[in-house]
Image (cartoon, rainbow, N blue to C red; front, side, top):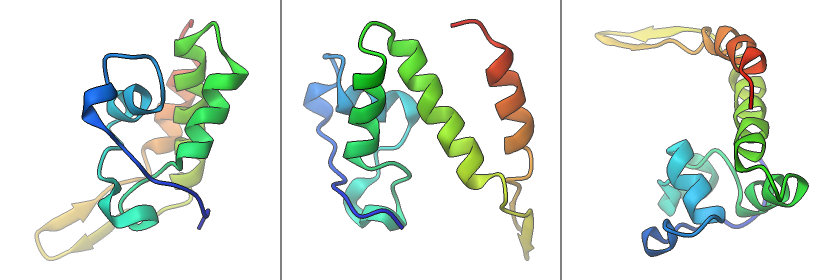
Length: 100
């Protein structure tokens, strides 16, 4: 897994930056590092720097990365718990069709 920082400060959500992006993506459980957080601070910052004038494009870049990262995962069932990640590929296709 990627080595990097995993931080989140809800007080900074008002400003366009790493914490706001993490909030909008729902990637806020940083306490467990890479075990509970999908993106590093550095990955989020790179997306914001690549698209400094388009917040939506930066977010789309991160969403596409997440979809590709989890697309290989299989659906799993353990007792009453079901984890269905196979639909991530379909979500990615829909994201690419949206206009940002």
